Image (tube, rainbow, N blue to C red; front, side, top):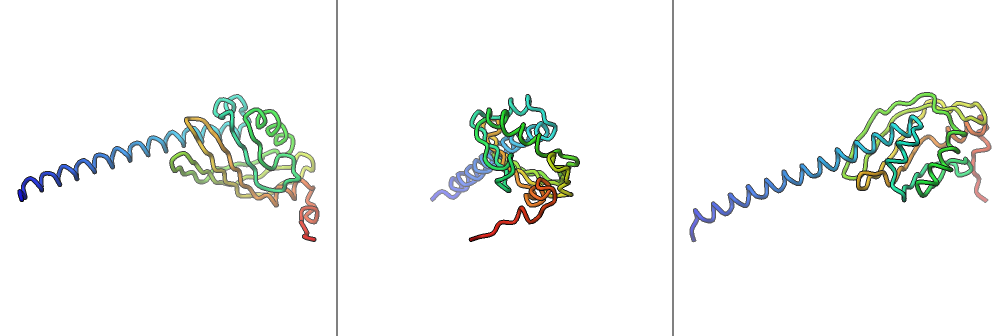
Length: 175
């Protein structure tokens, strides 16, 4: 067996694998960067109430999901770009006024970006504050547009504020 030939083949394979690995890493970085740019633009537009920018960044099959008390008008699953813009956004704006906002963490993996931070808000109907609460959102980006927004917040604080501080009204009992 020709050991020189075998060593040359192994060296070429190693270089080829390293080049492919570097190339894959470049593609992953490009996807991550693109996902983060779109997700961050969407987060900023959502935070500022810029509906025109949100509309350009949403896919038609967009889904906005808010975890929490389903008796609050803006909580739940909102499917479709038009539904989100025409029904959810007005319900949310009429229900909760954000008074403080910070984004403390952001990270990305492929087509998913995650942001986390703190906020305070006031329920429009009661005038009650949520107090400082944590929030997180997972943003799913497909082909340069946002397909999904999964929002997590202190739903107990939101429910309490919405009910005017009436904690008992938010408690669920099982039969």
